[in-house]
Length: 130
Image (cartoon, rainbow, N blue to C red; front, top):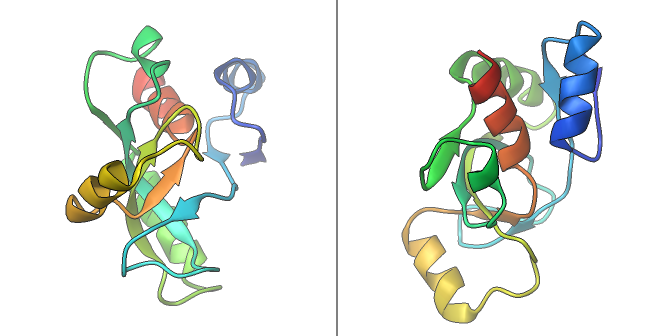
């Protein structure tokens, strides 16, 4: 297993060509809604693609899902550190400090609890290389 940061599609491709077949992305993100608190670990199972970039390398769609087996493996490992860790849906946007209150309210109503700018990259990489 290899740790790569920042998540950049080009880095994933180069490291994968060198033999890596699994990646763990550690990052910080914003959280909103009543189901996440400061310091919570969040395992992202789905990223809502509102970034304007992923359309160039992923098939059309509003979301991208993480690999189920890898998600379960990560959840199991994360629970040894924080037993309450759970799956989250992330809103991937190009600038994390530019969302409006109506957008945040909509996301909270949809069950989205994390906002960030790069979670779709590993999800998309695992989806396109299988």
